Length: 293
Image (cartoon, rainbow, N blue to C red; front, side, top):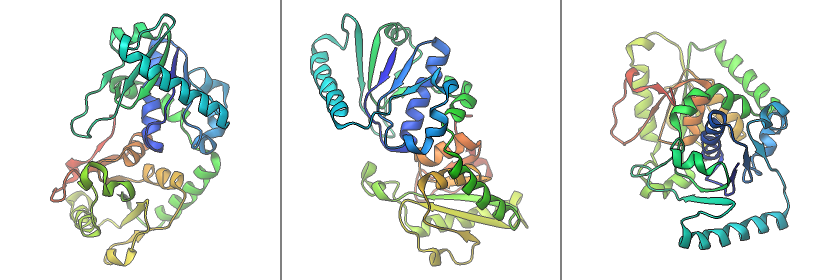
């Protein structure tokens, strides 16, 4: 049995994090519980309540301050005791892998015999850097089905996309990540509007898109000045983040900085994505690839 006990980042981080373990649990046949998805649970509750989903993973959605306090205290105690015995106890194990730099991370391999042996006990998972990409790809369809947002979000997204498809040949999602990216990794991926505009100009010049009527769908965690993008067909509105995520997953292409939000949209919708790794990056149609493919 494996129990995920601490929240790892925001929505898409938690989706990928849980997805890695779901794929691993399917292949190696162990029970999986998640204690740290409560703030996003209401957005996915319709699907997560299904018995067919719970045979893979059970989300413990107890919104109780005392329960959360007890869990935090338990992990604090285990965390400190584990420094003396490497996280190995008689009836349970504790594994803590903290997040490293985006570019210099070292991941814990979930398909290693050492980890699979630990799952025979109660194993507490605390941390971010767990890797299982081959099985994530293998079980993509199951993971996507588990993390299907509630029907209201999907209906709203379908209506927006249907309206766009009547007028435009190609929809390109532009993920303008701001917010915490001003400080994340010293702001290296916090791009100004002019950089996104330059990449959009490169996109319209792709030979494969010649003569196509292109819409750039702008999604951001901060308000966007659409006037800066005059000269392009754009759509922008301050929507619920789940709708933004679904809209990106329904595009034909996605551009944006390295962010699990747009990476999840690519993975979920099987949409080619180009991650902007630097401010002077030149892009072509060959720069796009479906994440996790």
